Length: 257
Ligand code: ZN
Ligand code: FE
Image (cartoon, rainbow, N blue to C red; front, side, top):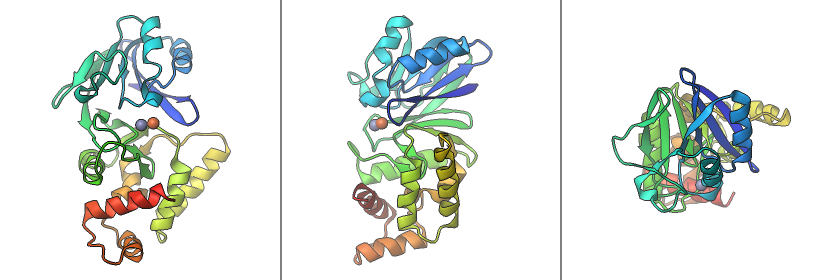
């Protein structure tokens, strides 16, 4: 499978997934149709499928224009997003497969950012939408801190270390600055911030990351770290340091950073 990153809107990413045996393609989170159509034409592939990670407008707004241009598209989303994802044809529930061309994948249900958020998984490649960003995670619009903690650390965290994670927004540099503020002694964060700042200055994007890198640099996957515990205790001396509660405190600190 070949993956092409398509920057959309201000800081969104859509991804074109190409089955190299059939030249059929799927697009993850087309926030707008025009840049996706240009890339489809450049690659000379046939779009058959849309994979929506959740219902927010900045992930689904290209659906209807793409469906009008490529009639008969299969449009995947979580079963609970019925009525919220324009043109949805597939309603994912536990155990379902995700197919296009000769590729087949699975999905993880990741409530937290929204109740119907999913991560699509094709082998060692995953598309996390707004659940996991490099060095960060989405805001909790519809879920609880405990749900988001589970989605990140148990569901996505259960994938192999060398899984490549393609995320929904270019927020990496700001996320790493926040990460340093709560995990100040972390040399990996400092190093990644330098590398990411250089990439961004050169006009490059930072997607994908890997699960191994996230375990080292993403504060929301480091709820057991001594440095983060010390930071949390400095803000809330009575804190009991249960993982989900550490997560909640981190998310609140990030909201106000
Ligand atoms: Zn979103
Ligand atoms: Fe988004």
